[in-house]
Image (tube, rainbow, N blue to C red; front, side):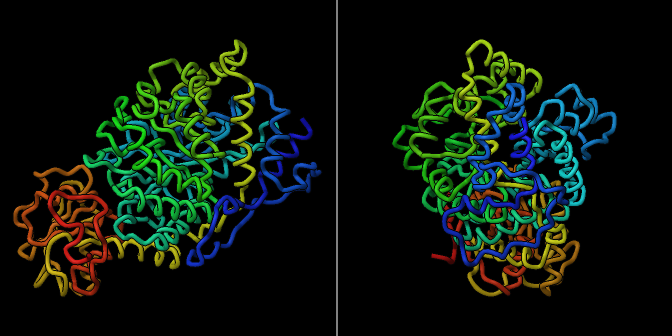
Length: 575
């Protein structure tokens, strides 16, 4: 184990280098933030593989000395209860006992020799909420302390392998860390802006903030292309309905995230946008031919892979044109023949959450073996951690899981880790003026006027801001932004600007509103009777600041809707 001990120990202090995965960078991207490396210990002896600086060579050397149990641990990436690594309350301890038979996240890491951990947060208005029963993120300071503790626990493992620490920070309706960070608008907002340069700059800022919190894997961007019927579970998480435009946006987002040293994960392969089904409830059917898939769903994934995305996440989807009747996660035709063979992806393939219904039709151990044999390298959120681990070991013993397949998976995982390292920007990077500027520019470029006058203020006289139920924070943020823009706002009796958002229906529209603004997909605007209709695609503070400037007549609305909203134009003013 001496060689693997040295190889894995070095990975804890190697600087972030995921930008080396990316093809061409952008001169417009923000400069790297100042970093604070982990405290250095005595310099370890350097192996030949380490001396070359080649992460893949170091991974191959390391994996040769791992036991079967250690190999199994490296392909597991569960969630945990508790907002600290080694101290949790009774409720969190009970949750961890159910998943892994331990009390704390740190104990989970050391007991199973985990390859990674996903940070989660439950929100009732989140389309992925069903798979996230726990919340262990709050503020940047808390997340940094948690990730520091988790990495410290990982140093106690044989070899001291660092953890992959991931989260779903897509922004928009799926955002895990909301407090104290620079909130990007949704992917659809970037699609409306149609400016990949701005996309890359905003996602570079996001990546730097994630890295400062100790997160080295972001389960973003969403590379799904929306079909004509839309997709309620994807919606504004997608850049839009145009495969070519989406490809440019995905490529820019990958360059931005990975330029900050955080691995990007394309999802949900091979594409979740052409079904109205929700894989959090069952197995959606994507009734596309192979030719249609090649034309509509393939381009954004291919572009992201070309940009150097380190990870691709499978979808629990029955894509009939690729492997009819088999969920993509468990399809070797899709996860190996198409992803590896056709698209030439050489990075890490990770399953969508294994606690979702399509993955729970088998016991945890059998599902683990099936997913690995299909070509996945990491099993995300297995519902029974011991069951998944034991199933992998049993598969090695009875031959149903070839050891070479597991070694291949772990080699990919370790290669990604050796590229990632542990150097981090200072926490003061988060919310910086440079980040606010980069993200604000993208939000301003996204504001779309679908109906109404193309010049001058869109509201006159005092304004009253109303909102559908549960949107008080967005309403208050818009009120403040309007006041800052010089617009008089009063509680009642003014020109009504009405806000609607994710999950709202026709009954949530206001018949008296002079202006209706959608903060999600624009489909609902087709049923509004307001004379002025706007879309921001997001309720982030910076998006609402940009909206206020448009309402006050101080800025134009340059965006174009990346999806059709009934018979409304994509923009009333922009050709």
